[in-house]
Image 1: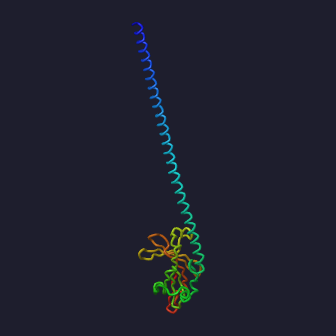
Image 2: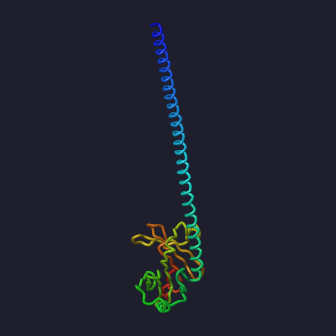
Length: 234
């Protein structure tokens, strides 16, 4: 009996010790898993924070690039318009506009119709001292006197219509002649004297503040000595 009692006691002790080991290992494993999950969570949080920072930096860089691109585009447009204005001035000094080789003051309307054909529209405008003929597909209008001499050429070239009033005044300064033309929309005329023969007018829409058309005027051909009419100055 004594032997059986010792054996039972030994088995109980072994069982308790084994249970303790199992509990300790289980608790240790659980603690390690918790620490691992905590580390992963910390890594993920750091990664998310880094990604957010990177996204913010990318957004900031993208906005900076877009702003720079717009500034460059505006600068290119301003330089292009400045070149176009200078070209318009150079041609106006010769009595020409950029999309026409006919010289204002040295050409008759017959010369023009031989090249361009029948005009789309023709009307007499007393306040302008002559008859105006329109060639729509050419973007041109010519004013001529009773002797058929062209005294004014108007260009509606689309390239000119990208020029703003501020572009003009930056290149040529404040216009010595200004006038307002009533209508819808109303227009402002900025006039510059080119030389003793020609004057250049930029006609600007007051709605868009952009050029509608450009006029090259030869005032001398608007004079009517027979009617004691001094003609136009602008």
